[in-house]
Image 1 (cartoon, rainbow, N blue to C red):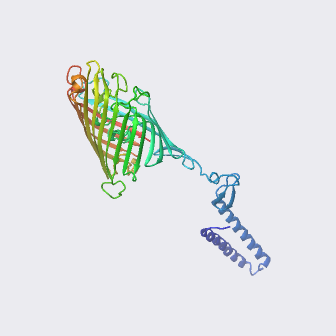
Image 2: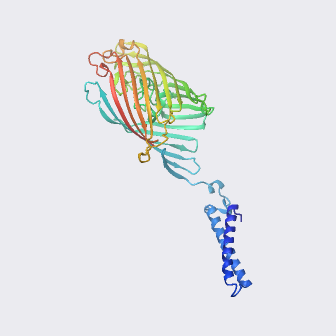
Image 3: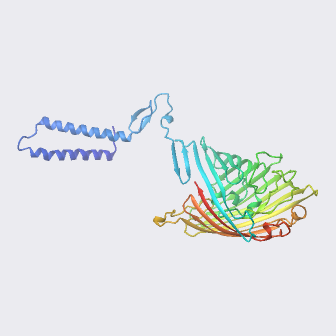
Length: 490
């Protein structure tokens, strides 16, 4: 039976020490009666037995437990009996783990993985110059989402996300993704369409409490099928899908489609230097996305007419709505060039959205192609030196005041603008109560206590053109609002 060099050395030292220890004792009695040959042999046999016992204990600690019915042929190797799958006998043990990324349940071979995650956002909004309108200033539970994700049979991923915040409980994500290879994947279910850059960013990583005016013109969630993948180590990302079709950033979706027409959505995003570890352009990404949607709505009361239920400000107040007799009755297209850049503590992001929709007013029996546009530029700087990212921020020194650690701090800013087609106000919207243009600037401070806890504060001011007539509320003065947020994510 073989042992390692280290173990042989240890055993030799033990034997030598035992021998040296016994020699002086023997010498003390040498003058009285020298040991006989038989006594010396007994001592040697005793030492050899002790060494054998010690070797057996060491090898027992190194040899893995043998599964029932298996046979250990040599230390460290376990073989299955006849008729038993070798891999079954060697199958690693499943495990459960908990950490900053949530709770993970993992099979030994990693073919089955379940992750339990969560997102909790508690906000406050304080409005200024609103003539003390009732119901504006408030605390609110902005998002409360248990998130279940995982993998089955190694290649099939799933995501299930319910939303318990707000007035209606709904399912945001319910999708299955088949990873044939990184370059070729198929996703089916309810998901974010591959369109807006800011809209595709996870809610827990956005710079501000609410997304910008540019996101008002892109879809939010939709049901369909999507082919996507990453090429050349992530240098090129593509997605193309067929969906039911969704109005502009409508936060609720139905499980039924009221028409046979569908929406074709696609996106390509290029990060040419992503695999260049030392390049200052490593964090540069440029892309374009778009949709081609055919609508055949009857009235604006039908969810799937392709028309938004209203465009909202940073403070989530509606500043524009279509007339109740309007509907999208033809081709509805969106195109959005987009880009971001991250280098060290700096992060920048921008996009432009051109949204063209064929709208009909059934009461007046008129129709027109209306083109609405929006754009936004936002950025941030990590004051504490961490690397900024589109996906997350990891503080160098997680919050621990007794150890003099205070987390990471980021200063952020944004400017956004949305312009509505002037023809909209001839037959399709009320110019007295709906604005034809909105522009907003925002500044804020984000405090990342650790990877899981974040505190936001920000201020936003939105100006409007139009919508100052009788009956106007939101648009008769600029909107000024102060936000706070406490966020927990795991």
